[in-house]
Image 1 (cartoon, one colour):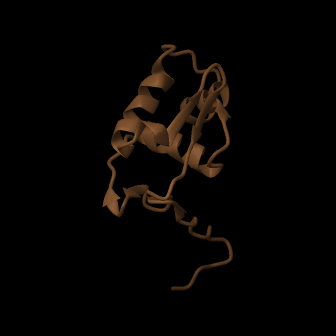
Image 2 (cartoon, rainbow, N blue to C red):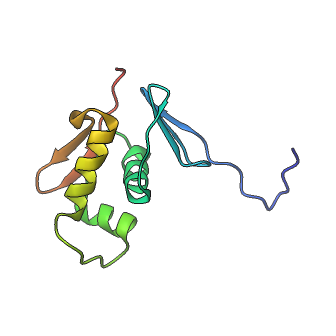
Image 3 (tube, rainbow, N blue to C red):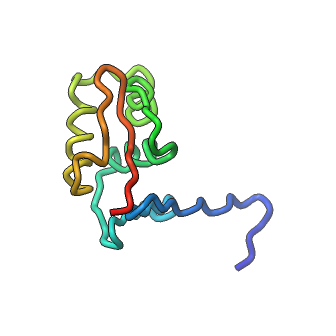
Length: 109
């Protein structure tokens, strides 16, 4: 396959323990099994996965996933985190730092 110099190169697949995120296809797999995510859940996961173990503050998440100045319901982020936790099968995979934000924990399970 020829790639012209102006073509963007494909983004790298991220493997974080048993979790795999393919930004080219928006596929997410856990233990090689597909995980169906909504677009917002996918964006939230990729933001947290960009720096696993690092706390991402709530305002940054809202600005990046929902857009700057988002003023929707206050529990929107919490609802999406809870849904993502359920789909990933382990609520401990996404840790809440009360009053600060969230971080993705990567284990070898």
